[in-house]
Amino acid sequence: MATIAQIELFPVYLPMIRSFAFASGSAGKAGGKAPHIFLKLTDSEGGVGWGEGRPVAGWSPETLETVSSVLRNNLAPGVIGLPVTDRWGVHRAMQRILGRGPSMGHPIARAALDMALHDLLAKRAGLPLRAFLGGSNQRRQMALSYTLTGHDRGSIREEMATGAAAGFVHFNFKAAVAPETDIEVAETVAEEIAPGGFVWADANQGFQLHNARRVAQAFQAIGVDMLEQPLPADQFEQMRSLRASTTIPLAVDEASVGPADFFRYAAAGLVDYLVVKLTRSGGIWPTMQQVAIAEAAGLPLLVSGLTDGFLTKMAACQTALAFGFAGPAALNGSQFTDESMIFPAKNEIEYNGSVNLSDKTGIGVEPDEDALKAFAVAI
Ligand SMILES: [Mg+2]
Image 1: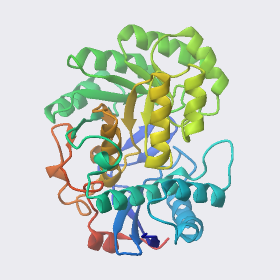
Image 2: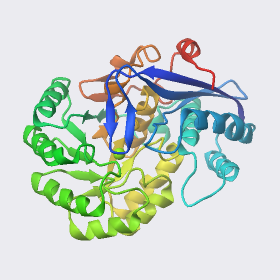
Image 3: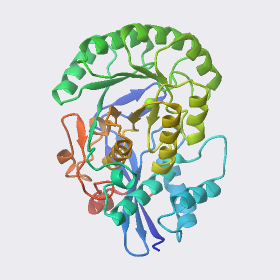
C-alpha cells in the first residue's frame, strides 16, 4: 500500500485587492499581502495531492510562521511512512505529536496536510472528492454568499448592487466592527436582498453580553437569518444566557474548532447551525465528524472560510456537497485576494455567484506549481 513519502511547502503572499476588517482583526488591506501556504504531498507510488492553509492574524493564534514551522518540523516527519488511506491514523499521529488540550491545536497546519491527503486519495480512487467522501458527483453547484464590508446605508446598497450584478443572492455582513451602525446595516441588507437570499451577520466575538442581547433582539425583528459568534469564543456560559434571551438563529465559528467543541454547543442547544470551515477545524476528516454531530443533532449546515485560496474553496464545496449542502457558502477569497497567477482557470469554475464543480478527480483544481515556486517566500 502506498505510504506518505514527501511533503513540500510553498509559503506565499497573495496580493490583497480590497480591505477586509472584522471585529477581532483584519484579513488585510488593499495593496497589502495575504499569507497562504500550499502543501504538496507525494506518496511512495508517485501519487500527488495538494492542500492549503490560510492563517489570518487576529482571527486565530496561527500565523504563516507557526503553520510553516509546525508542518515542517513536527507534522511532516511524524506522518512520513504512514499508509495514505489511514486518515484516522494520520489524525491520531498529529494529535499525538501536537498534544491534546481543551481544543484542537494548530488546526490550520493540520488542515493543509489533511486536504492534500484527501485530494490524493480521491485522485487514486478516480473520483471527484465529493463522490469519494460519499456523495454524488451530480451535486455540483454551490451558491456563494457575498461579503459586505461597508458600515452605512449608501455603501451597503452599492456593494449589494455589485454583488447582485455578479450573480450573488446571499449576503453576509460583519457586525460589531462599527457597532453604532449595526442596525442600519442590517436594515439595509434586509431591505435590499432578493427573496430567497440569506441574511448572515457575523460578529467575530465582538460583543459583550448586554450588547449581544440588544443586537440579537433588533436583528431578529429586522429579519436577519443568523447571528454568528456574537460573543468571545471562550465565553461558553454567556452563550447560555444569550440563548435564553433570544430565538434568533445562532452559530459559533471561532469556538467550534474540533468536533468536541461543536458537540458541546450542539448538546447544550446553543446553536442552530454548524458553520463548516475546513481550515478552522483541522481539515476534511474532523469536519466530517462535525457534520455527523450536526446531522445527529438535527442542525443544518452553512459554509464559510478565511478568505481562503481557491484550492480550499473547492475542497469546502466538495465536502459540503457530499452531504447535500448547496449554499450559502461565505467563501469570499475572490473578493479580497488576487490569485490569478496560481489558479489561472479559476473563472471557468467560479462565476455567477457560485462554484460549479466538474467531474475532475480529487479536489478538482491544482495550483500552478511554477507560479508557487516563483512566489514562495523563505520562512
Ligand atoms: Mg465567522
